[in-house]
Image 1 (cartoon, rainbow, N blue to C red):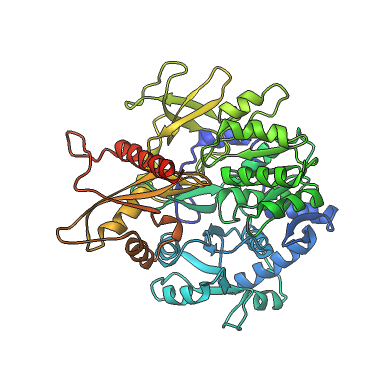
Image 2 (cartoon, rainbow, N blue to C red):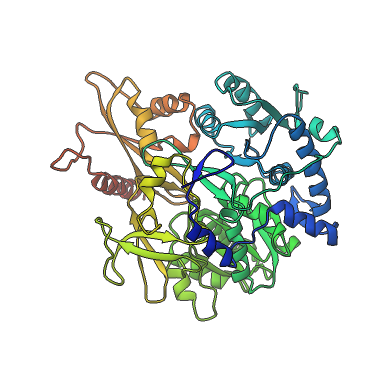
Length: 548
């Protein structure tokens, strides 16, 4: 373990440093370094399109230098953490660049999160400055931040982006000071640059640590693979506060490419954007591809510019991949596998004769080492199922919690993904299940225990078990099985309201409630969630049969 300037301990041995520096995966530069080099040679180059408006690298960098100066004058120094809970707006790109200039650590927070999640993340990451919209999609973020500020002694600066009512400090006012940073620090590309929060099986979110050389940089390798090194334009609808969206935000600083952002996914609108912007690559969870195909078929659109669609985050039916090959003129859709900890372990099969592999596997392993182990940590027979253990240059630096880090790596430095799968003879991964108790709702990982903990606080409930259930659009979503206290009653609408009142994101609210007298259990008393998952599938099938 090594102590970083940010104060966190990181997994960065001399051996990993040597391997990383020898790898083409590490650029050993920051995005600010790369943007500055681009701006010197071609300041008018369009790198991003936000809300239909093109952004040039010189303009973004100049605004980032002004923001860096404002933050520097307010006492922020290398290693300090700042957060942004923003939609897919251009300001996110500027904040990211400014952070890179000053050596700050960014903590992106997905806009769906509310008081409970946001307060935990801001406190856990010791965030000193927070950027947020005043209102977005009907929610008052500024009011939430005012509520939380008293609980967060480390939080020194609240900055509202696109403020409507002139708070004490807003983003525009910082830029209007028009004074760039005077002296910039020498930023270590191997220092902590990013903290991403993911759902943990214990209910407590895990803080994933990445450097300038790891994490989002991995998309560069994927984009080169999918476009055969020809560059092009990426369509990104995932939030910039998620590892996928953040990767798309930074990609144009590494490659001759553009990223076109959608603030909110709309498949019909995506058709027009792809044709207008001549998009060559897109990536997203299963619902994105499913809806894009449906709209393309309905409107007779073949999308001739589109070459690749990387699909992952939730189960991808093989039929969807085959259908894409028929509907689109020249686009190969394919499955990929990765996580916030180990981004894009597989890059997908894009060869002319590899359609079946693209449809039936989760992609070919590139630049990572993968082993499959049994419950005792021993390798399984070739082709056998087990937990996927992974290591490679793009792998994270560990969790902010040292105990979580220690529990997640083996003696050889492999990360335990918690995913069950097998390796094929084609060096492809096939995911077969999950060892971790996480529910994959349209690509968003949700901790079953976190929701169970909320349900256990309700006076009506004696015991709760949350499991995944099939969902046509999202792949899976949440179902709550509960045992009620004697004399109590609880309806689905009541449960929805009570969970919502706890202040968590609406995605964590179970969409079904099943009341039982007891749960199926093992001999030791552990709840048999496999039987509960089978039960809800049977109930849904029965409901469908009755409706027909």
